Length: 158
Image (cartoon, rainbow, N blue to C red; front, top):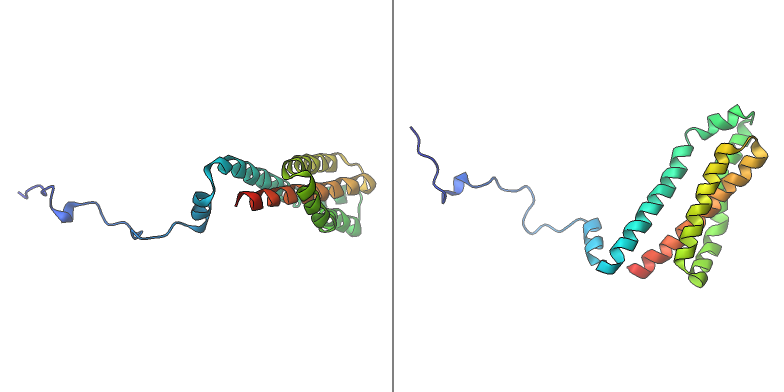
């Protein structure tokens, strides 16, 4: 019979870890640790809101062309519907940044998220191109405002 390993026997100790003891944390973990504790809840909220906004943009894109074609829009109409939010964001990113600096980041984040959400809802209710296009522009305008507000928040917190 073999004897049970002694508690001091190093061969019976837990297997060595694959991570060296002097390993550095990931850049994301390091950034989180460097953030002052009072700002962490706000940063988590901004991150969750940005993720939800971007998910809303991404979730509708795969079905939007089929929806637009179902409304009788040709390929040019589908292109307009898909490009409208990006067009609005490009036009409004810089002005939204100036508004964030002047009026504050929180109002811009709230108004931007709400505007983008309304634009997505109106997109789903639009019966034709002439009502869908303004809804898609609202999605982009809301995205620009929310992005500017959250970028200002990240700059102030970091």
